[in-house]
Amino acid sequence: MGAEDAPFNNSVVWIGTPPAKSEDIGKMIVQQVIPYAGTEYDNITISASQENDKIRLHVSSVSANTMYPDLYDFTYNYDNNELIRVSYLLEAIPESVRGKAIGIAMQNEQIMGVLSTGIGGSSIPSVKRILPETAEKFYEPKTLLSVTWKDSSLSALVDVDAGQVVGVWSGN
Image (cartoon, rainbow, N blue to C red):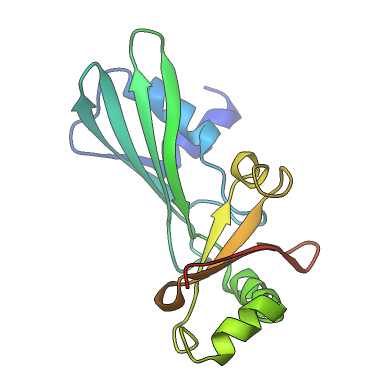
């Protein structure tokens, strides 16, 4: 067993009965769940359920220096040994970065305009990480943060490195 196996053995916990090949599947998941830059996951919890000829895997990754977990859904196909990420909700972001993203978003004219009307200005926005392959559809392939005021259906896509809003969506 090499040193690269140590984090896997210490950090992955299966909830319920692990599926066949759980060690191999767990290693594949560990390679695909990547925490926000500068943080690391303290534990990764996986639950599995059978879905037709595949296994559905729900993954929760927790970091001690963040308030929220990162959540991933995968499917695993035994026939071809393929793990596919189906969805993700990534909120394991350090509070300092979360605050910076909100501050950048609130300096945007369109965001300020909507928030100044009082619609949605009272809520604390959610901040989620957008992976490069998704961000590329709207901007460029890099990690971005989505800042969303749910009660106003207002969302800003923020490039924290550049200190700018790269997209705004409003449901109003």
